[in-house]
Image 1 (cartoon, rainbow, N blue to C red):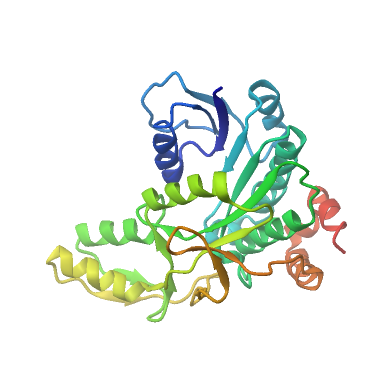
Image 2 (image 1 turned 180 degrees about the vertical axis):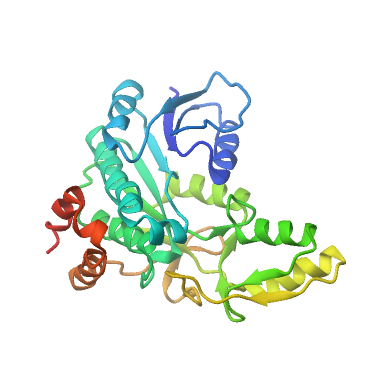
Length: 308
């Protein structure tokens, strides 16, 4: 008997890798959501598109009712740090309220497993995007999931995805411009779109309920990445340091094997003893409520009230 999977964010880079990967599995029908653009896909009788918007979470209700998916992978998000700093209420509405609503619908409609893509920004969060991702991870610890597995995956930075630093560097090198880096010691974790999709497929079937999964591969210094790309280009390109932007971290936390329970997949593990931390949650909410546009947002306030 065929099963179906709902995947949000069909125009995204990782989503395209995941859909093309899952289409190789004959038993899976795919429902992919989009807000404005479906994404570039070949026609396939097992691939259906539905319009939905995280800023209007109820728009997903008919999709669940109509298709009754067995699995959900939630990739849609406003994931760029600058978006969170420039439009904090809008980003929190999509990333926090929209995602929480989607998870609750998955539980309501008895989905087997739902994966939400978190981020390394959720570790000791300082940005609006990171704080929203952290709160979702924490809320998942308190949900009555019943027969639905709710899994969080902190996806590393995806090479050559929309807005990725690798694409920016490529464009600067092609145009013989200086490569711009915020700080000499800035470092990030990276993953390819193909690897990200394979990890998501693995977690879909093997992830543990309320588990928070991370990469424990070491981070890469952005300066080293830039120098490597310059060397490969054969050009003489300068590097210019422009200063850390609002909401950015200098270094991403590197998880060691002692911090995680390794999976069968090298580099992927589940954070050990991840629990709901009310003290930290309240601190994060207090930081968010210092932002005027968020403190005046009634829908956000009502959800935060459950934690305070």
